[in-house]
Image 1: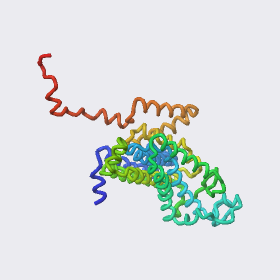
Image 2: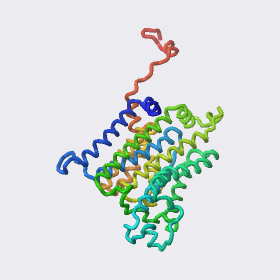
Image 3: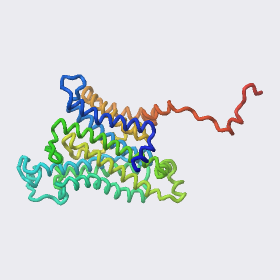
Length: 381
């Protein structure tokens, strides 16, 4: 019943987006695992991992578009929620190494042994259990978003001031995670992962499996976001974005609307981070860098703010360009990224997808009242 209601709210674009992802989740593993390496259709394992990373970025962009495109909350700190989900997954993967580490300690990760730690910090308790770790993937970013939003939205912090404090939040977390005495690996972060649920991470089949899993979770995140923005609650969110003071005057608790969608968005970003870490093999404090959150804003702006599908496509396109140009012209990539954002803001305020949709839209017929006052052919001037 719930699934039927979700699919009933999909438009053609959303349905096509889901079908493409479902096809990719099946076709890419087949081309990567079933074909010989000499085949022109064969997809190398590193490309599969790269595509899976793009899907994780697309999920982060979708989460950001949910709060920025539909509620007007320009968050420059969504990279923090992404990184927290990644650290929760990384801590589970580190606990799975056990005695196979360099120092062969069955309880403590290698960096703790190197720093002469004698016991496991409280924050690491329970991460040897997969269900607990997956709960923390959602709970850590969700609780942070709730605590932040509770104070920020009830204090009626809006606009550029809210953007600044979200950026300050992620920068503060970056500084905290850099410290070795916090027990999260310091500057080096968490790496050297071996397996997940007893399945080796470095095999081609595992990489292909994570790609398919990322595609399925992106579909799920899209359906949840689409259900929210298509409901009456979503209409209220758009009203808050366009005329917050008027909505508040009508008696709506604006802070509750903002808080709910902010927490949901943070949880989606955390899940994206958790899927990202096993595919890249490392998580460190650089993921908290404010520049990463700003880059996510560029993805959404380029793809199309307030479209969901456009945000995901923007993340994939920009990161594909980044992969190419950082190899071809590495010293000019950041300049190109900044120019892309400026040009998009000036000439494509609705993004690439918004431009395509606007060209396909037909102008609405004038209402009868306007037709009555339009000059008729042959009328005297």
